Image 1 (cartoon, rainbow, N blue to C red):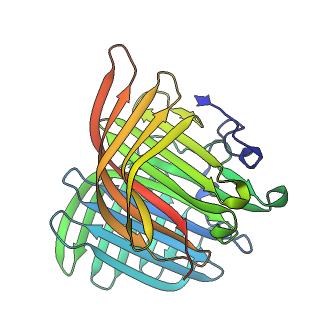
Image 2: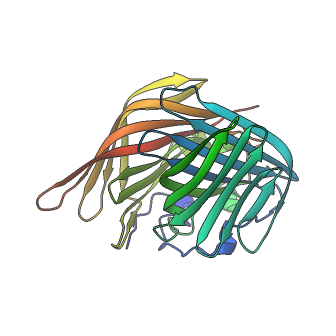
Length: 322
């Protein structure tokens, strides 16, 4: 169910129209001139293990970055920059020994580079989602755009991962999104907060994109609240408040934040106790990110009120030059 709101004119293809269904071709390589595309695959386990693989392509260059964080151990990061190949009918993207692909209802992620051997299977538990058409328009007549779509809001992830021969099995929650943009982000955006929160069989996804001074700091928001077996709720009625923040590597990240969702029934998410998981260096079009794990509490105003504890990942997206 879509509970729609209209923020301002740049929002015409995001919150001002009903959610559009996603097709396998939408998650494929689009190859538009001047456009940077990025695919993020994330996996989290109950013991605090965090894994992310992001593949970003621009022109003929592919850049893949892996982050692996095990509790009590130093995070592992690897990055390669190589030519890439990609299908245009469905997701099948390969950069060196890194491959992300969709086969039927399943998604597969592999990293076979250097001392990393990763082989994961994502079984989606929910249908793909995007707010409206997933596109925020900036510039005159929307000639600059940022597109955000989530082919896998939540998945059951299984497989193996190995670092320098230390092989472990993996079971956990998975998430996958696809982003496209055709301008250096500082030309229109001051930054964004994105996140995903897991509590039992509930998931809460959100995003808040902030315009820069040219756009008066206006914010475009979207949220998605879903429970397995029930109709998801999607809305632009989201208020995000950051009570405290810190800075790492030049990026501000929230220490404590609250999200109020204007849906039926109303919902609220409070997050705290951040652990910095990873930072990502600027891309060709200046996108850089910092990821944190937070503990949190999701409250849904049912009768009686439903309160669920869980864990989530927040992302600070900001413009930044190489």
